[in-house]
Every structure is written in structure tokens, then in C-alpha cells.
Image (cartoon, rainbow, N blue to C red; front, side, top):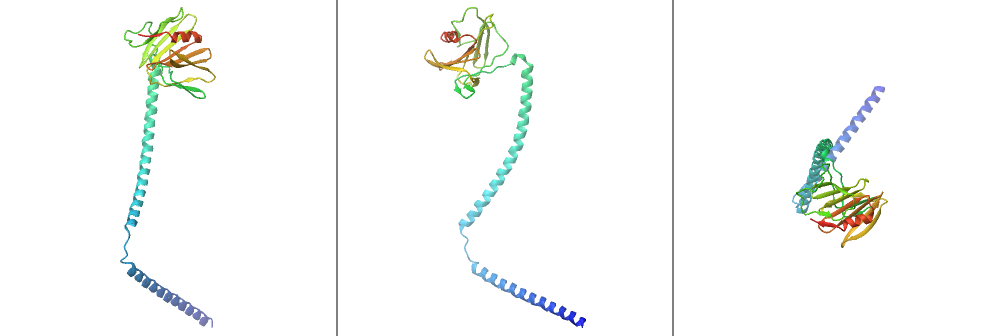
Length: 247
């Protein structure tokens, strides 16, 4: 009895498999038939040129993105190498400059844009340590003060690039620095908390800055940018500025 029951179950299982197989086979035939009809119906269809153009443009965009990505990777690699070279070069230059006392440089400037803390000035000052007690023989087209207070002596006369520097001092540790430069230099002056006064020097606009017992006077005459820096009073500085004579 059990054997007959088991055989019956096996027979039904096989019949079910055959039914599913036959159904799937017929369904596949129907799909193939419909596919053939669709292929026959659309075999002569014309593909618009705009579609081809769209695919071409799309492929170009993809290729362009790939090229840009490759360029960015290459640029990053090159930038890192350049940065390393720049750092090494800067360190070597700094070591050389610090080791040669005569190349020590201080930076100053002129033509003013006042910011919250600093004023941008179109002029750059670079003063070395090779001081001279008289004006260099090769100096031409420069300005020299016809008025200097008593007991002041010329201590330095230096030239760097297009700028000339004169320094006068007395035995009371008072000083007068006169800088004259071309019109294309820049630097910064700390004007935070300073008193700033606009002035007129022989028809030329200028600026006088007072801070920490120091006076800085800046102006230009459309030919040179001038700067006078001193620990004297403002009236004395203005008198010196009004008595600069071209040589």
C-alpha cells in the first residue's frame, strides 16, 4: 500500500514537471514569434541623425571628464614636486642670506590704502649694511635736503634697485631717514592706533602718520615716491620735506 502511494506521488510529480516544461516551451515560442514580428516591423525604421549626434556628444563629454580627471591627477603630482623644490630653494636662499651680513634687508613702502590694521603703500625699502659716509659718486637724478637740523650728520647713503636711502643722526640718538623711490613699489606700514593726517606738500597730496613717538611722512611728486621717517617732531619733518632739492 505504501509502495503504491509513493509511486503515485512520483507519477504526479513527473506529470507536473512535464506540464511546466510544456507551458514554458509554448511561452518561449510565443515570445520568439512576437520578437520576429517586431523585428520585421521595425527593420526599415530610420534612426534620426539627432540621436547619433546625441550619442556622439555624450561620449565626448565622458571622454572630456576622463581627460580632466587625468590632468588633475597629473597637476597634483607636479604641484607637490614644485612645492618641495620651492621649499628647498627657499631654505637654501635663507641660509645664504642669513650667513652674509651685508645682505640683511629691511622692508618698507608707499601710496596708501588704509586697512583696519595696516596701510598698503606703493614703495619698497631695502637697506644693507655697507654704510657710506658720503654720497656715492655715481648717483644721478636724486633729491637731497637743503635743510637739516643742527648737529645732524649723514651716516648712510645707500642705493638698492630704484631706491635711494639717506640716514642722518645726532649724538642724542635722534635720526632722520629719507627714502626716494620709483612709483612702482609696495609694502605695509602698521597704522593701528596711529594718528593719520592728510597734508599738502608743494601742491602734492601726502600723508603724515604719528605713532609711538615716531613720525612717517609719505608723498609723491609724480616722479618719485618720498618717505621721511624720524623721531623728531612733525613740524621739523615737514620743513625737511619742503626743502628737498633735485640734484
